[in-house]
Amino acid sequence: MSTQNSTAVRVYLARVRTALADLPSAEVEEILEDVRPHLLEIEAELGQGARVEQMIERLGTPENYAAELRVAGDYPPAASTEAPKTVVIKEQAKRIMPRLALWGLIAASAGLGLVGITVANNLRAEALVSLVLILPVLGFGVWYLTTKGTAGIAELPEVRSLRASLKKQDPEGLPKVLNYFRNLSPAWWLVCAAALILFGLMLVRRGNDGIAALPLLVVAAVAIVWGGRKVTADKRWLWLTLPVSLFVVGGAFGFVGYVFDSVDHRYQSYNTYPASSRNSDGSDSLYYGNQSIENIYAFDAEGKPLNEIYLYDEDGRPITLSRQGCDKSANYPMKIGADNRFPRPKIEQGITDNNGNFNGYNGYKNACREVYGVPFSVAIPKAPATTSATPTPSPSPSSSAIPTPASPTPTK
Image 1: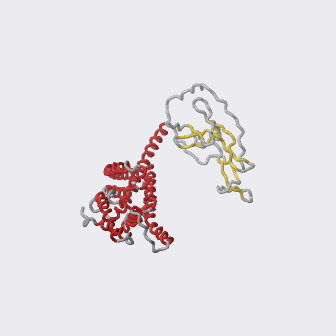
Image 2: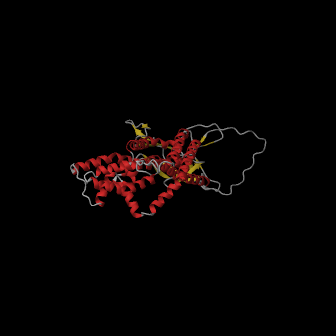
Image 3: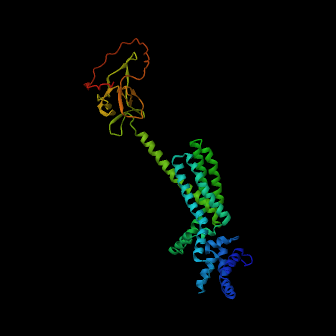
């Protein structure tokens, strides 16, 4: 590769020359001739069409590179025409925008990972609404990279420190690891694209809200395959590939949780005994199917309510449930025991006016009353007449004594 065609090297060396302008011109030319072959090698590694921003990512800014050359050649540091404090303030101000772009990428990528977990964990597309908060952050990063490039981000102290730390810990193994993952990256982009499209189809199958999410996921799938091929040569595409990759990884974890929840739910459904269960206080409760029953009303063949009945199971055991009543001293409902006598009175809370009349406003709890009676009526269907004789009932194999608990006095 000739120097005349090396635009990136020529621009980089021009800035190095400017940073060394206070040195004798002959020495500057000698320094530039010494470093030119190294710069050409770096440009060749970056491939055809390498840009100066990519060289800055590898070597640092030309000004910092020139400072390192001064130290290596035992030359005096460049004299600053500005006060040190002013220089520091300007340097900090220059880092604000690239730092916002970098940490915005990190925050948005983490947010997309959490969105992927949430959406896949219940296969509902509502969580994608949170993208309205994440996409503007990514949009700022894209705008910055388009207008300023990646040089400012590469020069951030945290980025330089991270790269130096990685090289120091494993100077030879790190490039091998990176090359290994670069070789796998084409397959990873295809996996991400397939996962996004499959994810969208599952959302559509689960509900109508997935219809709006499917085009967005298809566009993301196409974009990550297209941008993934360019991210090695152009780090600006990292602002697309990294967030989408973390969304896919988060979706994978969320889907695993969804599968485990589904299996656990089915297992519990198969092993549920709806005939009985327990309340939060440990007392027994009665279930019809999956619905809890708090009271039972019985009627005779004429549709008249039976005011006092006792329930037993097929083995003669009483079906005992907790009984609620009103505490007259504190005027609030409380547990007063347990029995198998039905129906229970209905417990109402409210307030009483100045005349002692009860008002059923539930916002207050300074009044309590027990309401007896059946709150509805029923029509009992008539059984068809038959000519067969009525069978004689056989003696019961066991008998149970009916307890006669004291009935609570209704509150007036």
